[in-house]
Length: 242
Ligand SMILES: Nc1nc2c(ncn2[C@@H]2O[C@H](COP(=O)(O)OP(=O)(O)OP(=O)(O)O)[C@@H](O)[C@H]2O)c(=O)[nH]1
Ligand SMILES: [Mg+2]
Image (cartoon, rainbow, N blue to C red; front, side):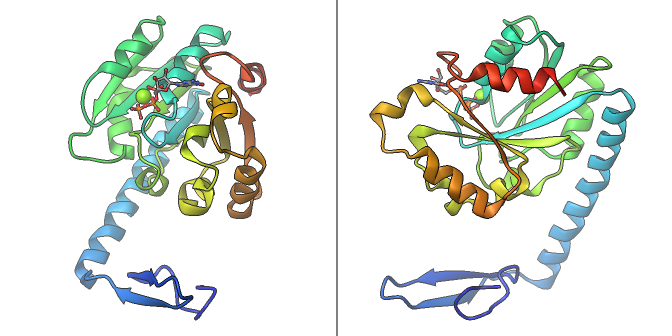
């Protein structure tokens, strides 16, 4: 419920705030047919995600869906994790265009497939299902899915993963959990990356954690720098012990 007037936030409306303390809710021009199509799309996605989950579980493949803004360090975290972790990892790379990230993963020796979504702003469960068929992740392995850099849409799409890992870097500002709560609500793990840059930016880890915990009290945090290796051991130990 909206704090101020009790409106239903899931209704197809947006809120426009004047900075004098007043706000207005405006109906979005969504027809009932559009809303039904969106519901059908998500429900189709959810059944494919369930099939992916069954596959992962049958082969004891622990799968994580890495979500973040563009450039927060997903691929760097993956390459550094692959180099240091004593467990086989395969990767599904999602980007609108290019195979740049898949090339970076391939250079580590890990198995990888790249999914280019074109105009799409997120991976969906069907894309992951086709990627798995090609990747053939081994039994008892880890499978990392790097989603398209976007802090909004990937929150909506279950891919059949064990958990979503939301990554935020200190250069993005500590208010992101408050501004983009859906992705922090959907995630189980939150990695605060680029800690080596903390002395140069106005980012308070405590504020970021507090805001994230308000949205999702069960979040598990790791603070690290994928480039310097600071804090990586805790993350690696956690993965080793899964
Ligand atoms: N200083 C610093 N730079 C980092 C760190 N992690 C990543 N970077 C840099 O941040 C930039 C983006 O890193 P990527 O790993 O490509 O980020 P990404 O999230 O995969 O980006 P997209 O796939 O485009 O969304 C690169 O220049 C990295 O070297 C870190 O811990 N510290
Ligand atoms: Mg990347």
